[in-house]
Length: 95
Picture 1 (cartoon, one colour):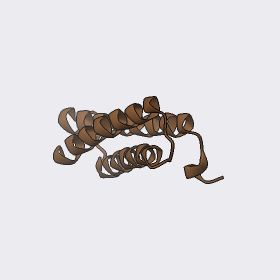
Picture 2: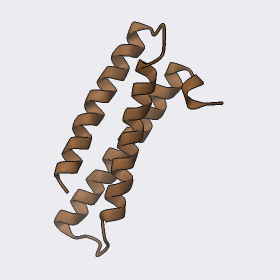
Picture 3: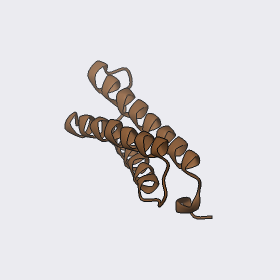
């Protein structure tokens, strides 16, 4: 089954999970870069963080593109796009 054929609830739940995981990984990378807990390169972790945030935004956009969308799903999707977009910009500019 394609991801675009899944129900809106499932897509929004996955979008949230991808987004929050990306935000947590990006935060861990920033904390480690600032305080230096581990002597490891943070580039791959930053890349995975940004990738997960892009995937979350993409899933929310897939929900908005569906036809006959209920208002509650439309609002949730718009809020997720806004929050993940701001977080993505923050982590890109913090590199």
